[in-house]
Image (cartoon, rainbow, N blue to C red):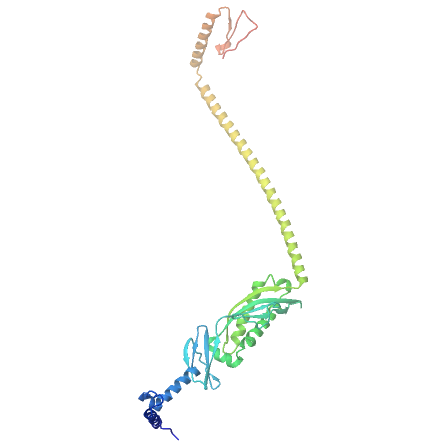
Length: 354
């Protein structure tokens, strides 16, 4: 039976009037006329339900929303912003699409393998057998993120724990296959090559998955833990190499010193040779010059010139005779100068004049 709100308020007003007439009670104020309409109450109830039911969701940057209608996921993701949905019939799941990190390490001190710290997960390090069956432990860091375009398909296929179903098994499988190709002692030397192979193989595996659920960001090979026997072997090899390099260095140094001394000796010999050649050339040049000078002098000695020179010398003798009148003079045949004179008073003393 429908309730007549007008009759209800009219009856209440009549009761209030009767109370006033009898002189007792408080008279409430009359409600506005628009509240007497049923549609107003219906809208108010819907508003209250909307506030409590919250039929909208806000998606932040680095997230996407997955709209589920009666249990079926909409393939189109809800990007950042406000989105409305119908409560009871629809629901929005917000998933993170930012970069996540998995650290594979010895985590005895780090707690549970499911320990998550701001998008960083800790997983046990990966135990591998090398090409000869020796145990090796690998620690690495794997960076990835959920593909926002196919997030709905990924959640529908793998569930919300898709990381444990996709990433962890693939990483362990790839690392074991690649590291197992090498002997343990070669792993530290070929570290960069192994990291590149792991990265390319992981990308290849992820690309083959349906809907391309994960985007690979980085693979960092952080540590290769070898057996103690292999460590000692590598250390002994390194020591031997260092000793060989030291001996090679000493030999090279001695060889360089010998070459240096030989070069210095050769340089000194060349210098002396050049000096001797210079001296010889100087003597030759001087002799040639003297010969030329003598030749020129001999060519210039004409009979008249010799006679003139004889007259000049005879004049000097004449001057000498004026001083020493007792001197005896001997002239060489032909009147060639120089001439010799001897003091008759002191025959023990001789003098030569040129």
